[in-house]
Image 1 (cartoon, rainbow, N blue to C red):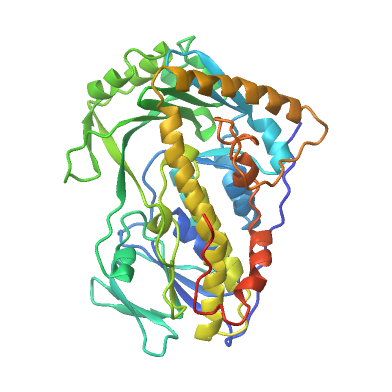
Image 2: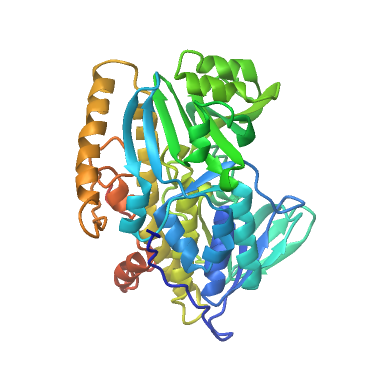
Length: 474
């Protein structure tokens, strides 16, 4: 049965000069382009500045969960992205020796959530966002590296200063320049490097043709699913991309990049294979298909949040995505949080009736009230998953594996009901399988940004709250 998707495509707001902002977004990654789309749909003008000479996306696979898919659909991207998406039917967890632990019925959850689980090559998702932003009127400028920015004296605008001497002024500047954000450090007035987590990633893209002749590997291609292997200090993730052409594999291991080195360096393939030499033989076979002599090692870093606020008191500068709350990829939600940030920011700016600093401050207070607690929880859960995925063999691991099976039974019983719907509950359950309803699925997959903005609008527009950003109780 075809999955039922529940969404409404947002119409572009029409607004006059008195309330139409000129917005600059610094950074043309997934979060920056998502924000561009959302702000354009709110009726404002958007210019995206990208430091690189070409706008593109590096990396390999990316998982899009229903909460993010729902937003992409609302932006009019379903038909643009669908030809490039893979729909995994299940997600499986395996022990490090290849022992089955548990599964999640993605097809069933798609029906319950009203939106799909999608897997993409990052470049395809990125190109789709560029296409939609351009359709809506975004102006994209490359070779535009921002060196500094300053809020004007009357607090009505912010000017960015580019490395080549150009200056550009806008009613609002949005910093979307990633985990190594220059704008974050300018905003804080000090250096603020991301925090190393103790893990690094090897990322591989394999040609599925090389897998089809091996009876142990062919099922990964014939039946697209997401697979996780968890074990002492290490875990692995893999899934199909581009309709079965490519196989994305990420190997997560202890960080041995020398301190003071770049966060991405060249690694040795044999060293990578050695991490999994005693693991499930299928992983060894997959690692053997990597035919390069070297492979990149990516140090994994986080940004737990930003205190005391994400926005300048003028209302003419704010930030989003990894520049504020970069997370470990262990909840498959970093890009999703950036897309949510952009979507919420667009809805908040959509409520403007003028361009005054007071009105912009209120909009940014609303934006942060919606986003701060949720994104901090995602960062925290990503770090929790680092611990629970990497447990050494022993009592804690055995207790985790028992919970996998107990909650799988509860999950299947719930999904067998007629028309199950994921309940919206903010508490995290005890299921170690994170995305199921008894884990974090109940608050992660169910996010409704329209409802969130509406519910927080009254509190953020109450007189007396204009100068203090709301702070959630964590």
